[in-house]
Length: 356
Ligand code: HEM
Image (tube, rainbow, N blue to C red; front, side):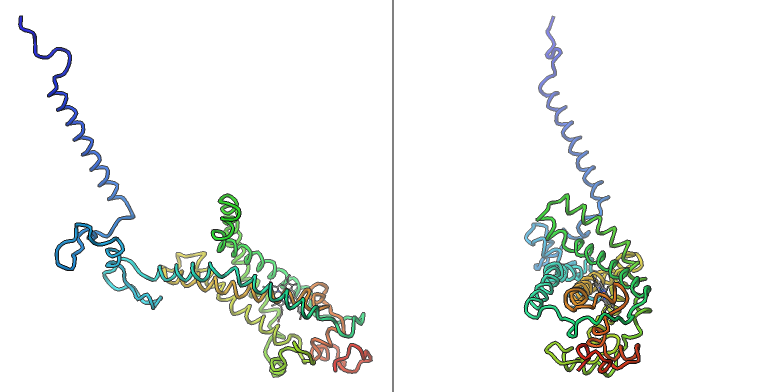
């Protein structure tokens, strides 16, 4: 009997045929899966990216143009005009890039240095000039300056402001400052906690701002006497400067807080509830204004805190106990002293504390 050409083993031809079929099936499955994934992908090149027409008119499928050149064809908008609308037919706007440059190269890069600089200047000022004393010493008699409600409004606003300032700085500078110093875990914990705190206390700040406005507007309207204060630079280099309840410096702080605070509130709300506008450029503008406004307020508030604590003897009493020493009142707010006491700031028998 003739032996069969093949026994239990497959012939070479059949084996190759099966392997080839298997490979073909795998290749088909791969092509199918890739195209399905691409179809579902949200990040894919513009439809005609591979058919960009080269200068010579031939379809450019040989890869002689860089990715950057290809993407350039789809960019629109005037890079010099941040608010210019994106031209028809373009799929990308250049404003996002402008925003990123402003944010990363200016705001994130320098924001932290301004408060540090202000603290440095004030430290130097303190070393050179020292604390501004009550020249006549404490008289032992006091004049009421702020009610309890005024003080509660002030300290609530101050507390909320500090929480927002600190959490805001962590959100802004977490990546460039905290991350390299303390690592990912500390940075992510601090940043996410700050974000929650910032979102929570932000709306409260708006309420505080309105409260402060209502309680402190009286006494903060500019008057002619403020002009004299400006001309004498607030008595920085000697000489007495007359002042009503608040001097020009304090009034400026009040109005800066109100105006920049309002900008911070509007931009903050825009960032916290971004779905109110479909135009991304408002959000980009909001982050820039919010950052610049925050740094401005933080820097000036450091100056205010300095004056209220170690800078001027006796000033903190007004916000702690609501009363100030008579001599302090005569030296710093003579017109207000005369108004509330009905006495002259010059001649009430206390020569040392009297204003000259
Ligand atoms: C430790 C922090 C602070 C201290 C020690 C402090 C101290 C003071 C003091 C002593 C006064 C009264 C000045 C006077 O009697 O003439 C005052 C007023 C005021 N403070 Fe503060 N303050 C602090 C933080 C803040 C913060 C963070 C803000 C803003 C959010 C702020 C806003 C104001 C305003 C608007 C006034 C009234 C001044 C005016 O209306 O012109 N303070 N502060």
